[in-house]
Image (cartoon, protein in one colour):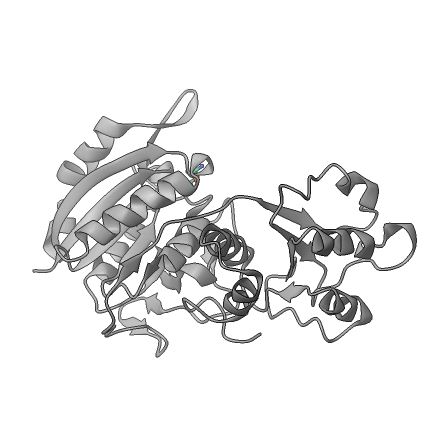
Length: 333
Ligand code: ASP
């Protein structure tokens, strides 16, 4: 039987519903796993470890570091690791870990639930059974298993608040579809022969600016560009921002460049890729040294930026690494 480690980090899957809403319940959680889901032990030899119990909205890079180091430490003692995690920032954590933990040769499968496990009509049991099953397969990926799909972690995004089908990977096919049979995609990474590394360094000196009609550039004056190392625009469509009249964001982008702050452009549209060569607004950004997020999710764009900044690469190194596919997060520029 395969040995699987279940790492608990919190989220709805670890919560109980009471009159005050969903609350983290550490004791009940362990009872549920050991007593109420004996079927898990028919899939694998399970060991459970509580790393922390947090609503995932409260997670930051200190938790990512803890989790990455624990996975790195345990990787040789288990055939696979399942991370139980809140859905709200699951795609951020999975993306961040894909940059931190390079060349892992075991599956690291994130899962969680939309409804606490203690509810009768909860998605927790199915997600957990599927995730443990996935962790027994030869998948060298950091992935998210949710509602019968397995997605590459750094291609995933939370799409729904209220539907069991909460995740999607808009620009990458699912790694597996779990039905009566399990259909794996040809893109699943296997057989990594390079030694794994763990480098959990992040720099949070980043701003994300959502572009919208009437975004007054004066409102951006309060951003301290001396303290900022990267600005990520969540732009329109293929990577457009306003470039005319008082609403032009080009003077702000120029100020960023003059302060040695990277200007990164991603899109509000989750499907397809940013291409800055298509319209004059993108071409102006390119002239200023703007970097295209391509087909990356916002989660991958933000965590990759913080990861590269955390590693103090020089400007040319940052630009090169950002545009490159480093962990399966992008395939085009
Ligand atoms: N607020 C919860 C969390 O992300 C939501 C969930 O798990 O679905 O921790």
